[in-house]
Image 1 (cartoon, helix red, strand yellow):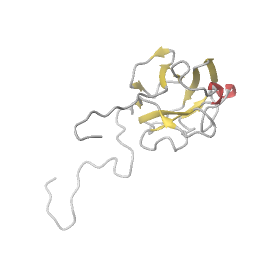
Image 2: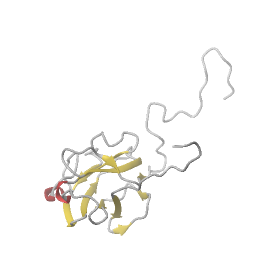
Image 3: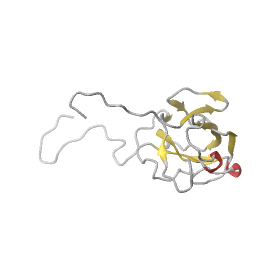
Image 4: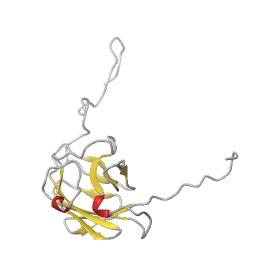
Length: 165
């Protein structure tokens, strides 16, 4: 491409929508620790691909870990079952149309499980998981800071140097 020429980026093939405790949500999906169920519907444009929606796999993972990581079964489960992905009717996985699936996630969020999550899917068992556009934002309870070894840190100073606190 020539310098200054426009760059074309293709849109995503799959999209998703969510209901939290029966209420339709808009992107980004924001939930609290009091939520108990989230229904995710993954769709594709008609005839966009020829994969069987019954073979699709869906999971929710922490955004900073990416889709190569496993779903945290302590925080999210498929229809109440602790699995690393949701893959079949036994997991609460419903092939709603030839171009969509609906997955029922049970939320068992811990106090430290706040943060940003992404919905990942692959359209065949041999495929690679990819993040779908949009995020799920889980609000931390009041008084809970960021996770990590320095989560309560309010100031810092270097040894051997003066610092005003």
